[in-house]
Image (cartoon, rainbow, N blue to C red; front, side):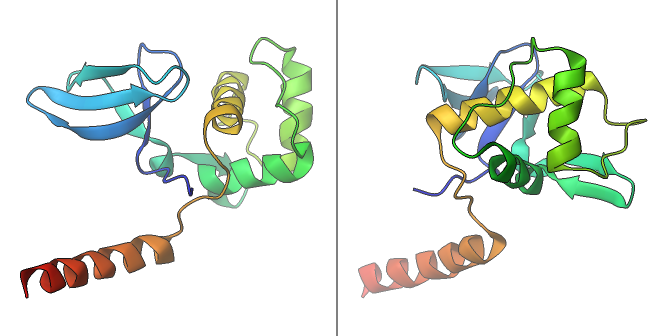
Length: 151
């Protein structure tokens, strides 16, 4: 099954990644990718979809999805170094996966988040991401199936 990064969330103050399930009165209903527990997250929390995240490079920005795929090419089926690893080890990984990253704006603290997300996705999802074309096909397919149900 393809992973839709627009439904995978990072929530401030909470460890790990979450799958968006539904809107709730005061926020969103989410499910932890790691242990599958469901909870309601208050709208006051800073909630970010992984699809909205980009990494600074010398040429501008690179979408997180592309960075994760480049990391997968470098690491194969192995896990990324832990976020508790030495900064030099994290920098070495990103120099291989994203050699043009902007060291002045992409800090080790950001690298730690990205490797944690990478390992969470490796363990609990897939790197076969939903593309924009897939999303468009799904949007156009849904109204057709509803029309057929109404006939």
